[in-house]
Amino acid sequence: MGLVTVPIAAMSMWTHLLLLWQPSAASEGGYDHGRLNLPFVGHTTFGKYPPFTDWTQLASASADFAVLGVPNDMGTQYRSGARMGPRGIREASTLYQFGHKEVYDSDTGETYSYGSVVDVGDVDIVHTDQVLSLNRTQEAVEAILRAQLTPMILGGDHAITAPVCAALAVLQKPLVVVQIDAHLDFVDQRHGVRFGHGNSMRRCLEMPRISSMFQLGIRGVSSTAKSGFEDAKTMGSTVLSVRKVRELGVASVVERVPSGSLVYISIDIDGLDPSIAPGTGTPSHGGFLYYEVKDLLRLLISRTHLVGLDLVEVSPPYDVAGVTTTLAARLVLDAMGFAMAKREKSEL
Image (tube, rainbow, N blue to C red; front, side, top):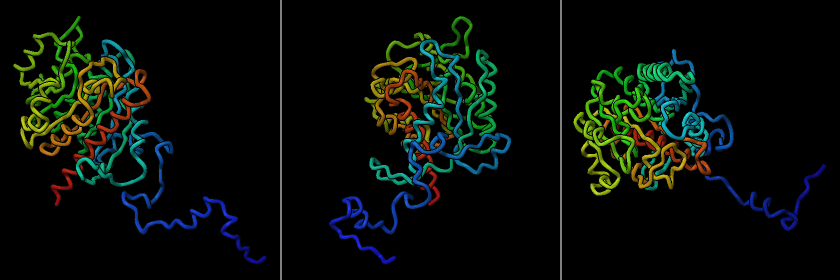
């Protein structure tokens, strides 16, 4: 059979365009290699990074970050649902992964990667048993730290931060905790409860290796009484409201954190304004906007050593169109990117 020649006029518009299009020699970001891997394709691990669920072999993971879910909301005092946070944030995180190896940040003019990441799954929570569940959280984070990976924790309510800070003792060095939150979470005990989401930061600052704390974004009518604020300051905390952070400026606030210190960051999603983060258990108006928190993370991580981060209190049942989970995923990825950008600069 001979070759049939089709006149241009008989071709469809799309066929004509395909004939005219020629791929570029190389594409930025690695789009020309491997699978395109669109957000709705594949498994929903965090950022579509590989799963690594054998915690006894974590030392062989050869990764920079380990993402751990803690689906525990037994510490909540109002709206529950944060137990679904890790699953929601993981699904939302696929939005930001198109199979490319690097990202370009037009805000800062930087191109960076998120590093090597493994998703180690979730802590095995035992419903109604808060103490056992928190102990298991501590053990999981200790395993990550002993493997020399940086833990990135998806909550869960804010009660999970206390066992994470307890696990940081593995590092055997003094640490600074930076909390972004609407609430101080500094109640000593209420009706005998000492390990709810309103107690967590006090429990952390009681630990001998937590040398100081910065509590940013605290505002409105808090769940902590005036005496709790006084206790926090006496015990070594710097408490700044959203208004005060804006008055001082992000750069000035970050300069108060000792340069070169080991820092653990705890982000309660209600630290951001509910207009952009409605999916949370205890929303509080007047919060930070995304770029304020992004700048805090970028400047803080650039002058300190990030030893871990948690993002808590995302409650998907109260989310609108997934805007809270996508914001949460974005903040975790931002922190990873800033940490890798700092590492790459230090290696030059």
